[in-house]
Image (cartoon, rainbow, N blue to C red; front, side, top):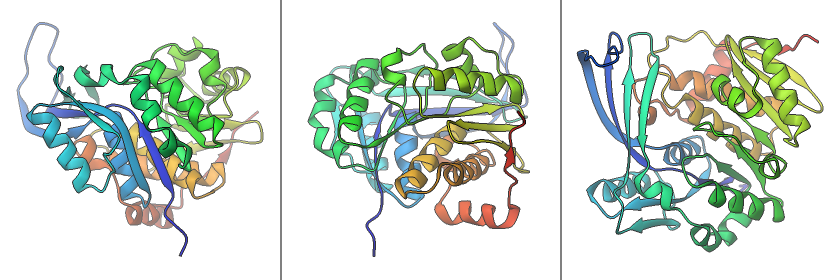
Length: 316
């Protein structure tokens, strides 16, 4: 039996505090919610947990505080099967926290208090150099300092490890980092931050993707209204939204990036990996909360078998 693919995630860990209500409060006002949920969160933790649920081995490089929430975060990660050997417990700052509001349409608004996440250091990453070099895919996000992300990416590229970047939260990125990324997966807001292009349809998504390819990215999968557009130097394809009942979009991007990483680690072709990720993200929107929505492998394979989502060549 072949070994399970290995994913190393460098990213944030937090506790999610989620409230769902019919509508968002107006500025300066308040609104009544009908559901409260507390759970493990942070894009790094979500990516690592999703990778394990999808059939991979996953290790997380991160920082948490030495407070109650930090201990709970480590315990939950361990319960999910994520290796936490490279997670540093920092005695000074609090652990990260995220405030999430979800309205009746499944839209979300979030506040992120990074805490210990912003103290992830180059030394933390370098201590994990052997683990990164032994991975099949490195998955990185931007909830931790950019110099730590860049160091991890350099280590991965030097070892021939594929790099997937989920560029969230959205910040401008240096060309030297983009040149080392195999696949980037921005949503429309992140694509605008990275390229200056407002993504509102397939054509604008294509312009944003080509901008990123010209700057050195191997492939871009842009989330746009109605679906996602994959653009590489070899192919272009449009993945229409799947027919699911959306409850909460929190964590859908994390599910997509993790599923993409797992499929690429299995040596799946990029388009096949994108379809797998597209289905995982769709499932994630059908449940309230990021962790609750992260799907298991059999669920994703079931969607792919039952729905048989179309993959359309992108119009020139």
